[in-house]
Length: 248
Length: 248
DNA sequence: TTGTCATAATGTATGACAAATGAAATGCGG
DNA sequence: CCGCATTTCATTTGTCATACATTATGACAA
Image 1 (tube, each protein chain N blue to C red):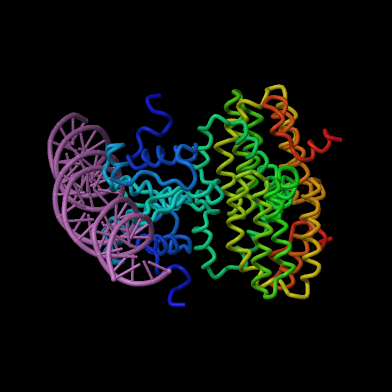
Image 2: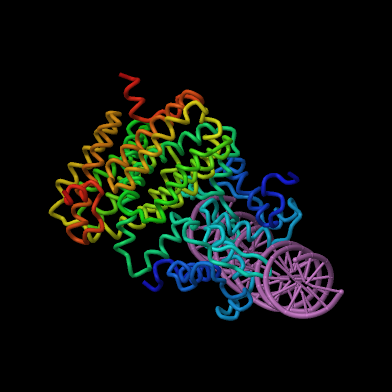
């Protein structure tokens, strides 16, 4: 391991994009403020203006900043960021408040994944089902915890792709980044048998083409997953339903 | 109206980004194929290499392409595109198959918005509620159909922001683009009273802090909205539940 | 208040060189 | 003469430097 994952080898403008983007997301620059003029950034990071401009272009494309002649390049309000962009997400995860972000992502997942399973039950083709089944089998055969997590991720991703709805795909992409973190911490080996059973239930419902069954099975799966997360990492991972139940 | 919306006045690299991105999304270049060398694009569009490179950088940031020295710039598989990116979405909507894309977006909306309303019921602050209420009032007071749609959009957006979960925000952003199209076509004036009543029901549930009620009210609202879309634009807008019901 | 202008920042153009890599050319042993 | 490894070459992207164009801000003056 000579490199920080895949960050060191990359091109110069990627590194600049990372440094600037990261400092924006972690709030070092503040909404509405302007970042230093391009030439000044060039000097600070010892790169050419070409590189800085291409980095700025990338960040503009992600909605983080907007620039005008004379007035400079300003940080846009976070409501306009592409929060689902993999890079933006990664910069978020570098923050100290990882648990809060994982919890919020789990909220989104809880909203989307049952519907994704229902759509998968309707639209999945042979290839899709093969991929989902491969995920199940991989979880079954997994020797190490790492293999188990990888298969688990593949399973869930396959469901998103099986919706045949491309707007679900980037959400799956995103989960790949985060599930890897939350699962490795939150999946105690003792729960594997139950997890496996619940995954197979989702698979069966999709194979049968039963949308409602697939939705319900996914809800159950996520609820138990949330229970684990609550137990291990705290109440932030609670679903609204569970919260209501506790409050009463 | 001297310009094609806001496309003509913009910077040169934005225009190049649009042209290239659009032609990729509409499949003129094909997955895995390489687009022409930078210099060639420069000649074709009569711009400098600086501009072309910045456009390519933007598209790379959206996941559409990846480039390597010597081998050129290739189109990545659509699974890796940031399909929720506003630009990518816009390029999609230029396609002939608008209905299919609107239908898919509605599927995502049906999945996300009930959960968003539930979260809003828990987390909304005074400011959030004021915005949601303003949306309702705006719908009530709307003279023209355009005003009505604008208020409607503001209402739904406010709910997404009220979740206090930034990962829901870009989805709201996206809907702003598309709701404007589907609503203007699919909202017959005769249904306004019912729509207004249902919107107020969501608002009331959020104000009361009742997550489950907010979810249910949103489900109802969306179901009726889907009915309208099905009636006007076709079966593609059907929800899975409605589809099951019809099949039985 | 209004209009004009200087100024500072981004936007665009051009030319040169570095680095990487795929493919052709080459050399060697069989 | 053929097959395989090696080397060389050429093409394309990546980076740098410089110059000029464009635009909007803020100050100044009528």
